[in-house]
Amino acid sequence: MASSTKGQHLIIEFTNCNKQKIHNLEILDDFFSQEILKYDLIILQKSSHKFEPHGVTMLYLLSESHLSIHTWPEYRYLAFDLYSCGKSDIEPLANDICNFLECDIHKKLLLNRGLT
Image (cartoon, rainbow, N blue to C red; front, side, top):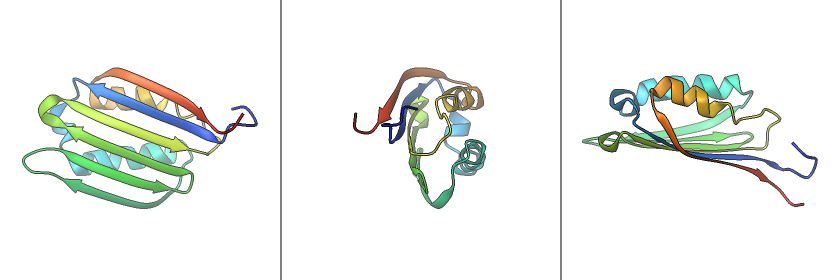
């Protein structure tokens, strides 16, 4: 990251996801909690909700910023948003998620945040 960068903001849309995984709050929380640690990020708080008949929303407040996940199992779709002002390169996380969820990356955007 350049010295003027204040962080990285990774926004991804995943399609054709494994329906069972993206509707299971415990599986998602275990996976994303491990990934957060893998990328040297620190969880301050987390909040989640499982919708009926389907869908999950998860929010992680990180010391480096935030991570949010929203799922639509009926469409096999997951929306992901991670902003981190940490030192780790978070872009490889996209492939980690894709492999775990057995899905495709429909759109991916990586923004270097900060003033130039």
